[in-house]
Image 1 (cartoon, rainbow, N blue to C red):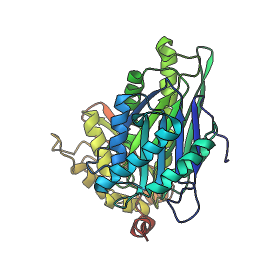
Image 2: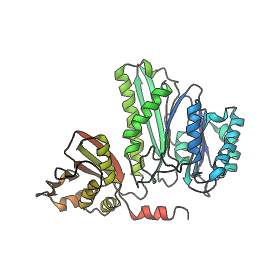
Image 3: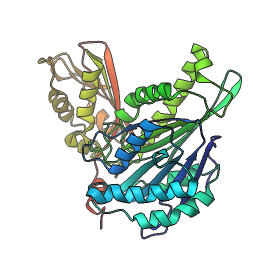
Image 4: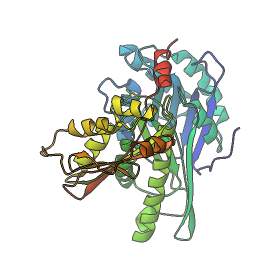
Length: 399
């Protein structure tokens, strides 16, 4: 076992090497969820999504799941009828071994698209996975879901509500194909608070909109993105019975945990050398603010300039101008690199210092600040630069 991560009462996990990868590494996990738990999920909007996502979303609507089966190394996407039939085969094996119903199993896959999954290896591994289930498997789970990731992403919170302890633990994976059309990767979070599925689903969607849906590495949305939250209800705390202030404390900590995981994904972006916060303020609507921030964050020209540590602010201005809006006059906007004012009154700022901007861009953590000056709304997006290594990683992904 690896380092200790806070266990969640009502959750058991096991992870093994099943043979999805040639090298010996953890690549398959089984998660057991106690009866009576509430489970919610949000999923990719990619129309070519894997049958793993389709099966999971369908089963989640039917009843409360008892098991999650998660593999890395193969996305099981773009595999036609075989993809669904292969999933059915190993779900049946899980059902046989655990005595759960077929639709009490949720399925998650991540890896190469278009190759048939090694379903027999999964089937052969299920008895071993079931026998290995234990309370302290979060660290191994975080390792087993990695693909091109260079490091695991974990986060945990322990808070006191109504004089009782509540724990929240989460793991995620993601490095490339990161763009918010829900989830942007695989994410598994659990808490021991008691909360209804309706409330949990609402919380997840709201928090996703300000965390996972506000990160981007390369503007690509995967076929398999899924984010799941489980509430086992094993603590002595019932969300419904909490005072308003205590509910706010729980939501605040839950959001912080998701934001931590989201930012760890960006920090581990494929080939990333910069962690960039794009902050857009004083906009007429939140939707427009996000579109402006995303246009900058996803611009290959902006991202390569950041990699080169080149304060080519014209690329930022261009990205802003590419957004469809009812604002045709951009003369009011202000562009800052960090806190250095670059552009104002529709031209380069009279006291702008390019040498200071170049010095600032040598930092790993950067901020781009935009004042649109036509409203009161704002948005923050986190992104990376675009390096030679990103091209190398994705050029050699299958070789």
